Image 1 (tube, rainbow, N blue to C red):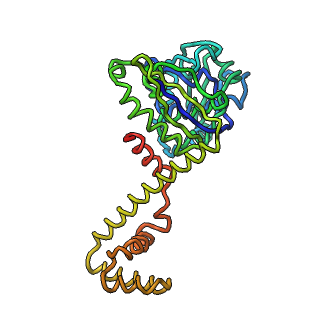
Image 2: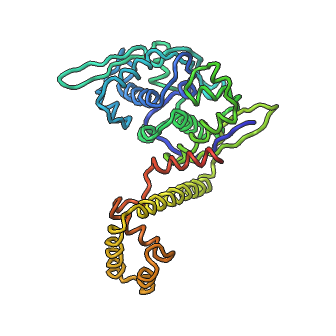
Image 3: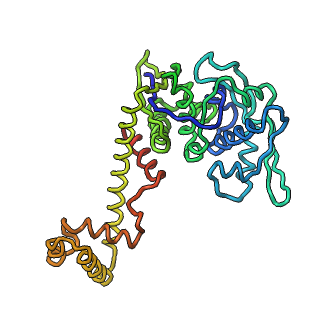
Amino acid sequence: MQNAIVLAEIADPLKKPVNTLAIVPQNKRITVLGRKAYNVMLCIAQDQGIDKETYRALLSDIVTGLDYGSNDLEPIKKHLRSMAATTVEWQSPTSGEGSKWSVCALIAHAELIKTRGQIWVEWSYAKPLKQELLEPSVFAKLSLGILSQMHTHAGVVLYEICTRYKAIGRTSRQNWRWWQPVVSGQPASEKLSRVEYRFFKRDTLKPAIAEVCAITDIDIELIEHKEEATTTPEIQIEKQRIEKESIQVANKAGWNEEWLRRRRAQVLSMLEEVSNETMDDLVVQFRDHLVGAESHPSLIKRLDSSGWKHSLVRHLMIDFYARSAIGEDWDRPTAKDLLEIASETAKVA
């Protein structure tokens, strides 16, 4: 089988070299926070210029760019330490496109320096890759704002790769075993080699695709081709943006509908747990609300004769109770809420 991913258009400030899009970790797992931090630091270094030996930025600038709220330095040290120790193969998603193939650490060194109550991060890059990292000739334009909202390493990777090839139409085909460490961020291991494609697709690819669709304005679709009993994924990119936008809107509408269905069920469960005495008071308040809102007399009649659980009244009671118990925005899902629904939908599809 072969896979293709279809998407629409996006662009923004970070110029990420194609050789850094499909990096393959050799000795350590690359975390989503580590990859996002690397992108922020690379953007800062590009802005400061190639002539510097080392690069320097306030930790708060890097952390803010990551949407990371902790003041604890240990996680930061851990990720910087991992960047300096993680050896990766640098390669383009398209064979032969990049200027060269290299094996090198993500960064050459990193330091945390406290000055006048502020914490600075200082880092450098290996000389063989510095030119290509800071002044790339072939690159993907990435939005750090969008990247900061991503939750999985696989989602970040697919967003980066799909952004790079939006003007080309599709990436080259690679065996799915090539994609596995690239997307998962995990080095080759016996455990990873035992994973079957169907599980890689279910647990990694499809949730990542759902994440990109839910968070970004890129629409991604998985297309599979069979080829000599093996799986060769590729990324296919759509030119018909209007059509794909309509599909994306339909997907998000479906996720919103499913979230709201679950939300209403949650509120109904809350109502059923209310004590009899509290419920009596609540029904009186609800009746006053219907009268004040000049609701149709038949609704008030149904409430008086059959109670709030009557099919014509129940949904109004749920709305009324939810606004007071949860808040005015009780029926508005966040991006994270939609992402959870999208991921679940992708896994069962």
